[in-house]
Image 1 (spheres, rainbow, N blue to C red):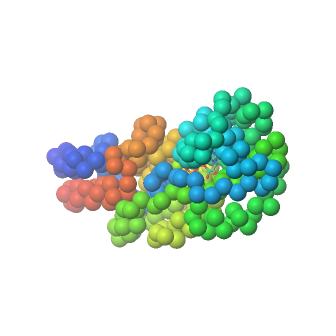
Image 2: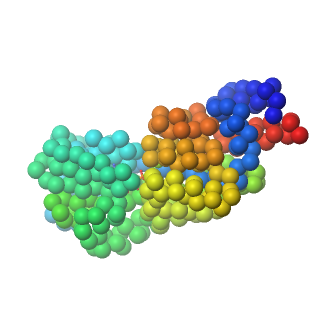
Image 3: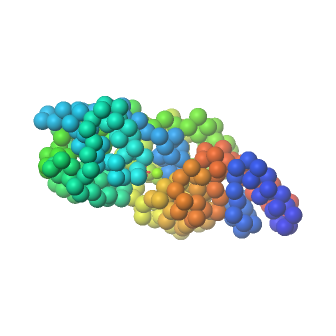
Length: 292
Ligand code: ADP
Ligand code: MG
């Protein structure tokens, strides 16, 4: 492409909040045939809210909120924010954790008010050999409603679950349809559970769903598609997504997300919704046509 046409495209992009790093990113984006997208914060608002709390017995709802609310204050995950907000709304007493550890892609662990705590997904509880089957039915029916389920463990026992819901962005469905018309296969990759991921994907026309994917798993997925000869773009917002963004032919960061994600990206979307990807594709294709 001519320097002039590239400048015009990147300038037009910038005006609509689509920041394209350089000519290379723009040209590569014209050839992309596979778009992998993170679920939370990319397809959805990224502002989950607690919808359900199900204690299994010993500890009341408020007690559980007090314990895990205290623990999650130390986490930067959007799910943690939802729990802290709910704990504050319920006027649960929050205290400083005596210990805190974050387990990437799984949850958090620590000690609060003299209790050993676990909070996170099934994989975290499997690591600690805690059986979840007494909550299987509850968890499944919540996930079928597109909710994300997190289990709570207190002193080595299953103490309940918390479900959150994160609404799909209003622009997501239209943008996905437009990208598919532009010849892209759209793949959702998420650390969330398969049932929840499929319930969200069911509301959209996603071509493929990969659930229970770790941060390294997202990067491997990018590599897997590249080995198949596909040209891959990856869109995400989190620290989690940075390795996959860097491995992709074009990384796309949500401007509302983590700084590291933006550093690994060829394209940054200031508005943080998929409409910017449709726009970038249109600009990239237009520039490509100019050289021919
Ligand atoms: P995503 O790919 O959707 O952004 P992550 O890889 O960040 O998801 O997290 C995967 C799963 O790990 C979440 O769905 C949740 O069950 C659990 N998890 C992660 N962080 C936390 C946290 N701070 N508190 C509770 N659960 C968490
Ligand atoms: Mg995420």
